Amino acid sequence: MGKRRRGAKGREPRPYRALSAPFVVAPPTGCRIRTRLHVSPADAVVLRAVGEHLGALAGADLAARVRIGNVPTAHNRRAERKKALTAQSSSRWAGSITRTSEDQYQLARRALNARIGSLRQAIATLTARVAVAPGSRERRGRRWVRGYADDTERRAKQQRLQILHGELRRAVRERDSGRVRVTRGGRWLLSARHHLYDTATAEKPLTAADWQAQQEGWGEVWSARRMFLTADGEAGAPFGNYTLGIDPANGSIALVLPDPLRQAHSNAPRGRYVLDATSAFGHRGEEWADRIASGASVRYDITYDPAHGRWYLDASWSTTTKAQTAAVPTLETLRRHPVLAVDVNADHLAAWVLDPHGNPVGAPHTIPLELSGLPATTRDARLRAAISRLLHLAQQHECAALVIENLDFADARATGREKLGRGKRGKVIRHLVAGIPTARFRDRLSGMAHHVGLSVIAVDPAYSSRWGAQHWLNPLKEQTSTASTTAITGHHAAAVVVGRRGLGCTARRRKDGPRQTAATTALRRVEVAAVRPEDRTGTTAPAPPSHHSPDRTERTAPARTSRSTPGVRQTRAGPPGKHPPHGPTTVRGPSIHDQLTLFGMPETANTGQST
Image 1 (tube, rainbow, N blue to C red):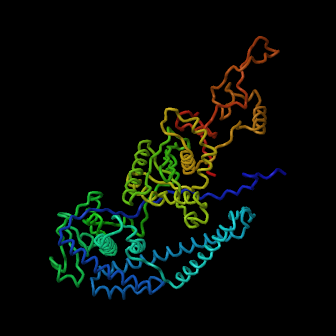
Image 2: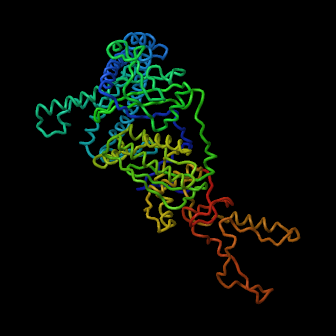
Image 3: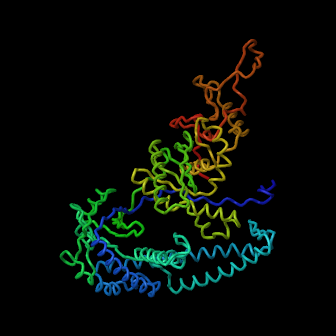
């Protein structure tokens, strides 16, 4: 019985986990476009009055919904709440408010469940490490659990463990009672109210005027965040919305006023107010115009940006119905074409084009992605610019899809600092994980790729970096042209593994050496000897092995002359152990006639199944 394989420092390596199957990311099911409203002072007064009035009603309705608790949708008393709100607004404003309250409550429930799961994972990690003596390690099943460095750190973790147990009990009580915590306007902005002096940009100590300006600035942002100006669309309504209608002919906007504000601000029949500002959608404007012309529903949201003093109008609609799903191509169809494999990192995107057989084509690509320390709008713009470069690169190489990792770091984010290292190094790792725009990148990429006719394949991210560095990094450096200005890193090797996994090829390369064992060679000799000379119908020589080139015969040394035919010199093929050098583009496999002839690669490829 052979010895069991050992890992680093004599430890028994952990078993590989099963990889989830690749899948095609579904395209977005909705659309949202935005335009700026150049409102007049009178328009600003009316919009602010309507938004603050409806915002107060929305806050009261959300509190009423929270008091009802976790009940089925049929028992949330929405009709009763809507009837009470209609008297102070209108039936359609009331419908939008109650729908938003239900969405906020359900979102808070999901966030509470995620918080409970995060606390349980952190408690399990702390409990396992606290049970081990400081400076030692113990075996738990197939894994080793290492204790903390010293008694001081262990006591600190024990205190944190008690705190987490208390938070978990409180969260479970809230979940069981149906209670949730929701802050309209944002909890972060509410907490910032208690630190206005510390976050002030003026020179300290603040004067009375500076302090007053700081408070007024916070109050303006708080009021803008809590305004409610959301009008849900209705199918069959004029221009797709009864509450807020936009005429596509001239862009005029008519807004239904709440009942208490009609007498003071109405300037149109049936309690409406027509804004002096007009709207014009540049992006996907034709699609919006076709939709409202056909009577399809369109939702509108009006928001205010106090930092720049601007008003914005958003139009959104669903591109699918409940009985209809978005059509996506199958994996088998996409795997017949080249793909662009992408490895997402905190500060750049590493990409490489792969042919249908999983071989890297051309040079690697690195797209910078500097997002750290920038405002949210700037980060989103830079992310869109990077995705646009990816899509242009994919179109340039006639790729059918982009292959990315299905990254969300759910487990790592849930466990948090209890698992992602300790001290300064742990903070660096956590900051790095938090800086990778996984969810935003995936959502933006799927939407933008769908509009240009490309698909997105998501694969399991397990072992991509490890296997890329182990099996692909050095061969890629050897085989890539020296004229390439892009330095090949482990991220490019990981991108190759990601792309091969999406194409259904093996992520790990085979080891060096001959592809025919002694058993297969002996079997071939037996098969050849079984054919009688009189059965041969031609002079065709036996086909060479797949790892030899058909025309590779050379004189390596004077051959032995046959005794029966003196003076005749024979040539023989090279030694069976010799074969062309191979790199990342010469993974052994069956010969395929339709394969692309790539740089530095013979006409063989690996078409094995994924591992």
